[in-house]
Image (cartoon, rainbow, N blue to C red; front, top):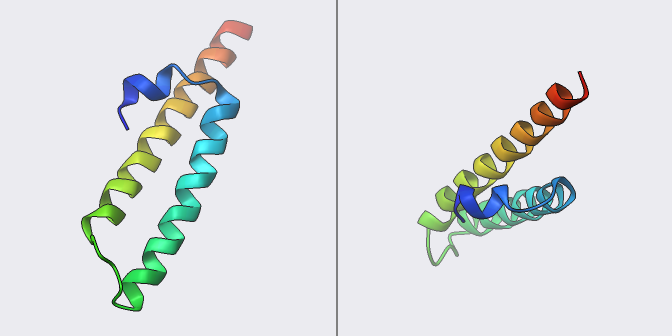
Length: 69
């Protein structure tokens, strides 16, 4: 997922997406531990997507704080 797509989402949507990605990471870690991961690179990509989502969420929070001050 691109950061551009994430910036178009609302803060609530980003929070929900972040939770979904965390859950997916947990499932992928379990699959990797059981040696059933069909695509080991999926875990890395998902972690990076989570980082992007968290970064955009933080940017929105800072903008809101800056706008309120």
